[in-house]
Structures are given as structure tokens and as C-alpha cells.
Amino acid sequence: MKKLIVLSAFYLIVSCGNKEQSKPAQTTAEEKEVPANVATEKESVPEFKKYLRKGILLKEPIQVFDKDLNVIETLDIKEITEVQILAKSTAMYNLAKSTDYCLKSNFIKINYKGKEHIVFGSSIYEINENAKFDFKSEKNEAFSVFSMTNFQMGASDDVELTGCDDFSLLVILNHKDNKYTTLAIPDNQEYKSKTKFANLIHDDGSSEEIYNAKVINDTLVMGIKVGYQEGYGSYFLKTALKDNFSKSEIANIKRFEEESSYNELK
Image (cartoon, rainbow, N blue to C red; front, side):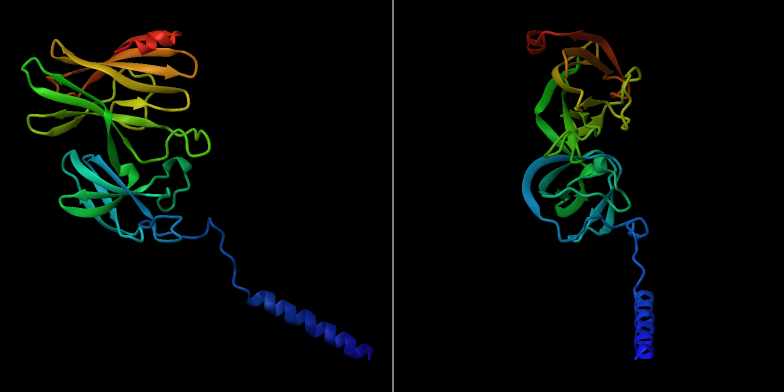
């Protein structure tokens, strides 16, 4: 009887050992290889919500995705182009092999040259219609300057501050030929953002907006006002029309405490 019990125990141990060896090795998240042309967090087909706005594509290659968020082609944008934004995904995503929360973005449906495309939100900018200023050159040419923002994670999400960079690019429209031009980032700007273009910052420490735009001696002078966590400020952003806005500089930086002074900037 004792021999039978010992043999039974032996077979049980061997059987369990074989089961352990037959289990497939588990792969950690770090070991999983995600194809570079697929979006991550892609558990289901993304849901899109109607979102009709004017959008801008910069002069750069733009990846196009199918409904399952696989890259299917690349648009070669030759010049800054206005497009129609149609819808945006209700969720935000990282592209493959990225876990950076600040790089999360919505996917956006756009109408480009009469065809619907899905693009990643960091590649498409929404025109901020409420922040557009018209001006004329000394030759009476009509222009507009405005800010535009992409759909990447901003300085805050639905819950709290994110600590992510958040800025809007500045763009100028020449109404004569309907051509768009970006502004070069100021040479004397202390805080250098990751973009090479002039921009307005909206982070957890400050928020900038244009309050005025006019031409003085063939130079576009934009008044920028700033709200800080404590206090306020302002400065002028200057760029020469003759250089096609390829150079810019910051001037007359001021700091003040009174909200009334901030509100009077117009």
C-alpha cells in the first residue's frame, strides 16, 4: 500500500512538471514587436464623431490610415494646404512603438482634393477662427494672421494637468493668391519649443494670445498678451514682410500684476 502511494505521488509530480513545460512562454509588453505602420491600443475599430472645421496641412509627408488604423499611403504635401476637417476619433492613440503620453492624438478624417482620408492628429492643424487678425501691407495687399492647433495631447486632459507641451503655430494667409506662410521662430526667444515655427504657448504655467496686428514700416507687429499662474505680461512679435516672414524677433517684453492692464490690451 505504501509503495502504491509513493508511486502515485511520483507520477503526480512528473505530470505537473510536464504541464508546466508544455505551457507557452508568456511575452512581456516590452518583448512584443508592433509593426511600425500600425497604431497601438487598437482593440477595436475607432469611433469617429462629426467635427466640421477648417484645417491646415503643413509642407511635409502625411501618413494616411485605413479604418483599422493601418498605414495605406503617404500624401506628399508640396505646400501649406487648407483642407476640410470632417470628424475626429472619440479616443486618443499612440502610434506604434510609442508609449509617450504627450504624443497621444486623435485620428482625424479630412477631405483632401475631393477624397476622404484618415490622418493622425499631430499632422493636421485646426484653424482658430476666433484668433484671426486682418492687416494690409503698405502696398495695400490684404493678409490675415491666425493661430492653429493640432490634435495632440495638450497641457491638460479630462482629469488633470499633463505636463505636456501645448502650443499653437502662427500662420499668415495672403488673400491675393490664397497662399499660406508660417513664421520663423524668433531668434531671441528664450524658450525654444520643439517646432521651428513661431508659436503661442498654452501650458500649465502660461497662456498666450494675439490681441493686435498691424504693419509699421513694412514690418508686421503682433501684440501678444500672456497670462501666468501669477500675474500677466505682454510682448511684441515682429516680422518683416519683405523677407516673406522668414525672420522674426520678440521685443518690448513686460510683466505686470494688474488684471485690468491685461484686459486693456487691444
